[in-house]
Image 1: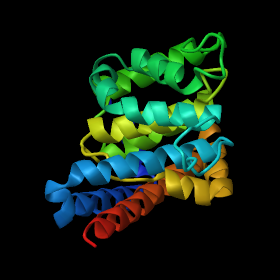
Image 2: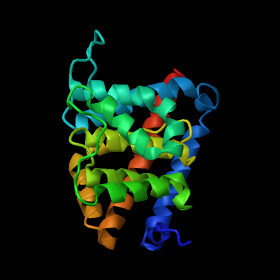
Image 3: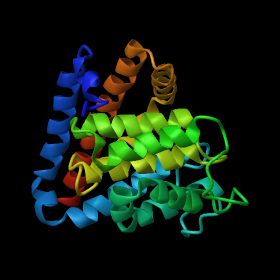
Length: 241
């Protein structure tokens, strides 16, 4: 069968961007701290990712000093981050169930009926297609699968609330599942926050389905993976001091 994502590798600059992103993430895993102490750095990366993801969607960046998180977006993003390890097997086997669970966690304080996709024509069919890709329907490199999952969920906005938090969490799960970032050390969400306008523009370009727009998103997403690797290296370097 034809791989539906294979044509993405024919877009100008995409193979090079994919290789650069993969190498950046790989090198972070080879950092001497991450060879043995990766659980600590991964925990820090998870919190940073959750904070940045919440801030993109309007939540506060900082966790209160007393640890009492009252903002519903940040609280949901932190719940999602804490659950990713448990949800990974479900994501690999039944991604739509995992998405529903991610939304329950993200929107528990915002949505009276979390976990149910919106009844919008075409959404269910595209989610089914995305699930087939995640469960072995493509053999393209990890960065491309992660980018497509992230971009497609943002374009679809399948839930009434917290679609951004859910999409970025699904991207992290995909990075783990594809072997791109098996220890979840990267923090690409930080660049998405710092360059929020570019992030929104690239997502809009992807949503048009135009090849040049898709290319724009893929290149941007690969740059976020590289930036996330730099953030991860900073975390690891700090752990040595």
